[in-house]
Image (tube, rainbow, N blue to C red; front, side):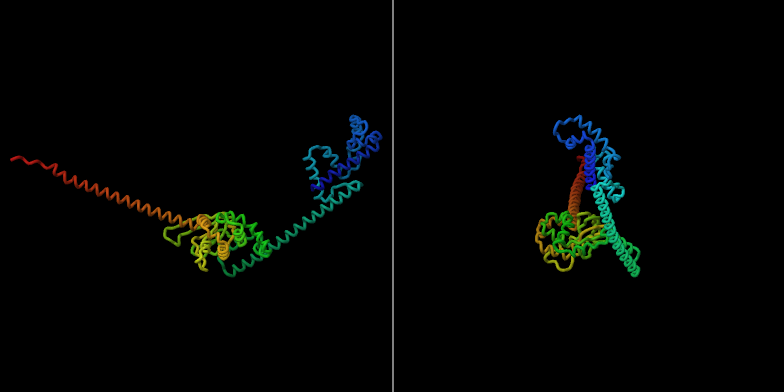
Length: 413
């Protein structure tokens, strides 16, 4: 659009110049001073005389379309855009002319017999036709791919409905399955990202994973100070995970199969400390938080066996959650290959942001506070008992002295 508008403006100037040359050639007085038209100062240059020639010859012959065949450039002459000194006016007017005629394939153009003008109009019409064909082709390709994916989704949904009907699932479970399928479709548009990435070469797969996951992993406080090699290893092994509302990620006491790094959404993390009476702790996990930290403790322990650690908390999705998952085998591999994870600084950072360690710390603080309060109450009671004993002893002494003081004296015989 900009290119055609610019060429149209330049060719309009050239056509106006052609008109001036022809008008000057027809007038003897103007023809003698034709070099003045291009700012030449040869000979006796008289400004007043040249201005009079311009008004009487050039303006009269070239200011109107009837006196000269401008063709498609007539609009530039009559609109005054050639004489304007405002760049914004010229740019917007020429841009609109290019857009208008490209979109209509030049149907509104009325050309003259000028060869260059006709060639320009032909190129404009062909370019508009090619752009229109390209737009139609892209739209057709997009609609075809979208139609194919929609059809695949309909087939999967129909198979899912038939399976749920065959297995006589309750309405609540059916609704949860439908909600998950719908949420997955909205997030991925039917594209299996994991299979697409896995089919690529290793170096390209690593670069793509780094682009998708590196900033997200760095936003997790546990990994923000890690070296690049460790972050690359984590990014390569992360897998996308989607959870719908009210989905249980893991329940307290169940084996922990993966660590979950939250990208978007909120989860509820609850623990009863193994069902201990009167104990309840609740926390909210949001963006940049993680859960399943029991796996990291399990992987860092050299004495840990093959059995996965039990979860100390129940984690439930409060909203739709998008996250990256790191499976237990991958956590074990990363901790065995990168010993920096076993440093004290990393372990202290992990404990600071771990929900499990925070719960333990809160429990220990509460227990210490209760012991302190019990000791304080016991000391207060002991002091009160001592004061009461002292008070009772003083009362007994005063009671013995009182009869002696009130006893009447004996009369002398």
